[in-house]
Every structure is written in structure tokens, then in C-alpha cells.
Amino acid sequence: MLVLASQSPRRSQLLKQIGLAPEVRPADIDESVVAGELPEVYVRRMAETKARTIVKTLDLAKPAWVIAADTSVVIDDEILGKPTDLQDLKRMMQLLSGRQHGVLTGICVTDEKGFCRTAVEATKVTFKTLDMEAVERYWHTGEPQDKAGGYGIQGLISHWVTQLEGCYFNVMGLPLARTVALLSESGYQHEALL
Image (tube, rainbow, N blue to C red):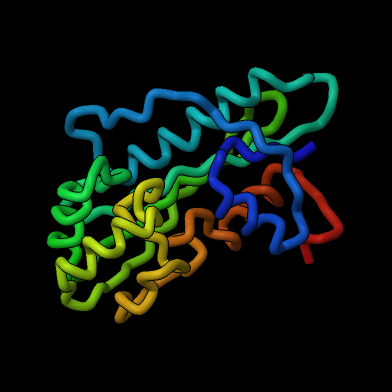
């Protein structure tokens, strides 16, 4: 049994893209940042907490693996969450405009016994200089409201990206190569994983 501890349709879609069809069980956890917590520590902690929360709900008599992930957009050591309103999105986009920022994803694969394997994937993304009127139009599409940092690289504003260093799928929310490596290390086998 393979479980995805996430309600993200993008993560589910990415796993289906490589032939995996996990059961989806979102984890309801407190996602607050601890004061002074480094972004890398935060995303790893969130992924592990999500995985451990869901593994407690599993039938321990059957082999099972849980995949959990947490993605954050980071600039100047500030974690940019999901924008709360248009003004928050504009603030974020002013920070990202014409600059390079980081996208970090913490990944955790846990088996039914609760043994965890974790990793953090980092990708650097550069945006062109942004026009705040375009940012406002973007807000009204509804796309940025459920996305860390207020954007999805695969969406309407993909043309704002001028450079990317690292894993594209990481910016979408699940670095596939790293996730498959963690699954393999944890003993998960599936015919779809070539």
C-alpha cells in the first residue's frame, strides 16, 4: 500500500505521471514555523510530521509506505507561505521581482513501522522584473491562493521565470528523482519504477 499524505493535486498528479497511484490521506497538522527555525529544518520537520501523523492511521498488519512533502519558497531567509490576500501576494512578488529565490521541499518516506527516510531538495528560481498590475490580474485568476510563495511554476506565470537551477518537479511540489530514491531505500518496489 502506498499513501500520499497530502491534498496537493500536483503531488498526486506527479506520482501518477511515473505510474504510481497512491491513496490520498491529507495530514491535518500545525504548520507554524518555530521562532528561529531554518527553512531547511522547517520543511523537513513538516514532511516528517505529516508522514508520522498518517502512519498512525494505517493497518500495521500490511506493508505500507507513506510519502509526505512540504514545499516552501524562501527569499532572504524568509519563508513565503500561501498569500492571505492581494496585498500579501503583492508583497511577496515585490520580494521575488527580478531576483533569485529558493524553493525547498522536505520529503519523508515512512513505512508502516514508522521508520523514516527524509531529504530536502533545493532549487533556485529567478523571476523577471514584475509589473504589479500583472500581479493583481494574476491574483484575480484564483491560481496563487493555494500555493507557497503565491505561484505555481507550471501555471499562468511560467513566463515570469527567467532561470531555473535544479529540479523543476521540486518547484511543482515533489522532486520525483529524490522521492523515488527514498522509496527504493525504504524497500518499496513497484513495476512502474524503472
